[in-house]
Length: 408
Ligand SMILES: Cc1ncc(COP(=O)(O)O)c(C=O)c1O
Image (cartoon, rainbow, N blue to C red; front, side):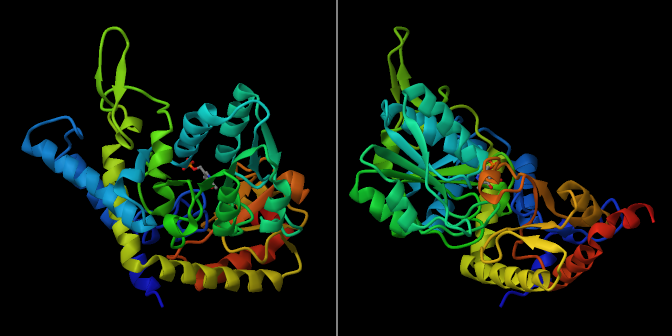
């Protein structure tokens, strides 16, 4: 059982007030999470006390930076159970997924090859594949979701053909919040020589993810969705696959030599992908975030969030003015207040200091499944409370009475 009241003391934004003079109830953790003081301190410490470049200098300061910058790689490796040389620093999930699509996909896909996605994917796991398929003459196919919006192994089996080369799917989707059967999918795919790229943006922050156990080929995630800074993310790749992947950016730091004739010798993975000065404070802040999360325990975090979700669903189902699209998911809750435009509803929540997301949540083809163009989304993190959910429910009850709340 987590001591949530104690944990909340770690987050300055949970101890202030919003622009509306009310305490912040932050239910948009799928978009980004709040930052604990230890992360803020780690970033400030770097900026204040040792802000040299990484992997560039031969002086003490530079050594300090390198040590702490590389320490994050060890922490990531521990978090997801891989080798440190399989951890690539990127600028976020989007950047990581683009690297897989353009660095691996563009090199390995041929005309008429097939890439499997679902309509529940985030734009960052859709648009890079659209582009790479267009460039290579390969084809996108969609794995059907079941009638609740889940990804099932049966439907993956149905979608695979002998042309399938890559499956790229979210472990937990960002609107419907279902946890896909990744381990089974990897087994099925690998038996047929298919590569599996997993978008872990909504899973790695919330649960234990063991890449060896799942046997995923690539895994992408973002620092800012797991208490870390923005502008930093991770691409995990099996080492052999990373070696077969081309960097999509070239420049300083990624090569061991080159000459005026254009002959270039790149360094091995992961360094060959990390050209240019990286987001050093971001990487160091991410390290602090991972230490913080591991101290709380990923299983404890997951358990707490499942309890929060179950409680919210139960309370929401007691109201007859809500349409809930994924009562049985495990991540975000997608819903609408009947007859109310989602952005109007989000504005109403905002007046009570409650941050919820409205719209399409960067999953713009999911409406083909949901048959609704916009939804509200609440997404919890371990620092949220049952009391916050009660306050949220009270605002849900106001429903289409929101005009009264604004102007009444
Ligand atoms: C499932 C999923 N994939 C990818 C992304 C993109 O993450 P980022 O914006 O950090 O690159 C998000 C962000 O919301 C997401 O939810």
